[in-house]
Length: 461
Image (cartoon, rainbow, N blue to C red; front, side):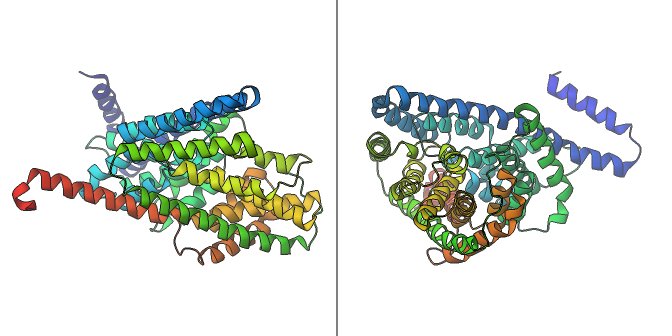
């Protein structure tokens, strides 16, 4: 008898001994969420550490042998793209649209399609592809991939449940996993909950609120237990900021909302243009060109284009180098466009935050704001740019709030996010994730039609 089967039988005997049927069912329904949350926290911690080591590797190369980038970056970009194309095509990009598509398809009819979007193979390739890209200086983040990984973990745990286990909604399981993933990635439990409610769920939260809260707590505590109770950014000084800074907050929100939405629009345009490529050589050439553009900018113009952008955020918030030049903000916006469209794994959460920070820093320099007021505008810019990309204003505001623990800025951050969300509609009515979700669902249906036509050539003819 296999080990897994013996464990299932032991659990069954233990729970059969519990006489209160309601208590037994509630406990049985809670256990999969607890197990998946614990696994998500552990994987998120490991991924965070590996991602940090990869970024340090890039920094070492830039500091000591910058010319190596002309070899390292193209190789890493090509390898990252090849891994995804060869082993798990749906592991490309951020991962959030894949989770959204999986939630929409989470019915018995589309079990196989959900399996293509969320799986153990997705987890492995997602991690390795993104690590390789960031080692090469890729302008990507780990937060979207962590959400994709968490959704895959929760979906897999759900698939392991034996037939006698009380029924648990696959859709709720995946949504809860995504929230736990965001909470573990940023150490932002409220952000994870708001993200699930605002971005992922179309059902009433009462149906799964206990599971959602529990999963976020367990995943977050697991990450904190291993990494410590850290803040993603720290405690920027915003004591005694001026009341008139509200005007700068509105201005930066308008600029970042338009810029974030424009970046998403360009990414979508390039991805759809790439679908016209007829050979892998064309894709490889595109990846190579993107890598060389990133290297050229980093070597000759501005090294801050490399990586997730956390260094730029901490520099502008915590040092005397408060004001970045206009081209730095521009490169931080261009970087995600080049890297995200290569087809490798990597998210746009952190790069979007850093682009918003760059715009806020640049604008503060133009307006000659004090250091304290500059910090306020930088944080507002971060929330505004992320909103322009995701169209999730409350999630963006809460994330920036929790990453800095600056609760007296809650109204400024929410104002910036709401203004950015409104002006972003001028560029596109829908978010990057909404568009990509539709594309992924279309691709899955198209693959099914092709498979059926190959099995039934008479019908297809």
